[in-house]
Image (cartoon, rainbow, N blue to C red; front, side, top):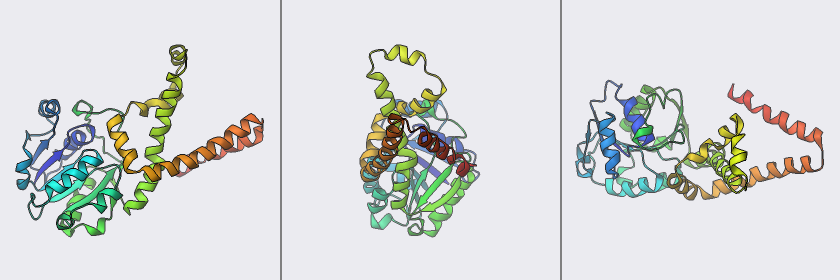
Length: 277
């Protein structure tokens, strides 16, 4: 099968490296509007060839590894430009808007997916082998995809060693606001709080593991995350409100020197590890 990955950054480039190991993938092509990304994708052997969008008609599997707004735009261009049996898989970080806007005549071709992986880096330079190994991929409204497309998506994601779960797009976006989008907001806020201090260089000279872990996400792409916050605005705001209640409660306990309550909140937070274990 011929695969074309549209978007050759961290997500698309890393996926290309994983797909090369699958026996049913013969050729991997790439499309990217960034000329530098195109040349680096060839240089790093992420793809076999850069193609023009008009050649998409010959592709069996089309991967959309671009921001959500880009996915929404390109879906309209894919309408009537793909082969009848083609599989389109989007890797967008929010799903409900995408699912609602898939053109009707390519709905069965389409698989809405969100691989829960990545890091704060971007571009083809950031592509790494094994990025998807043992990570979760969420397939949304999967029953609306065609049987062939369902089979191909499962073969791909299981083949690159991902753990597949199925979810309604609305639930996905609400859950993602808590475990993905809000942590980025907190990280940006922590970074900006320190940067506003007069002695920020002295403060950062003391930075150890805790601060570095909390602020790491603040290095993520502003373009990508502005897009995500726009698409998932209501869920993100709800998550912030709930987090603010918890933060205010802890602040009040510290202010009033209610140390038993402080201990209880810390101890309760420790229980999160039991869910992951």
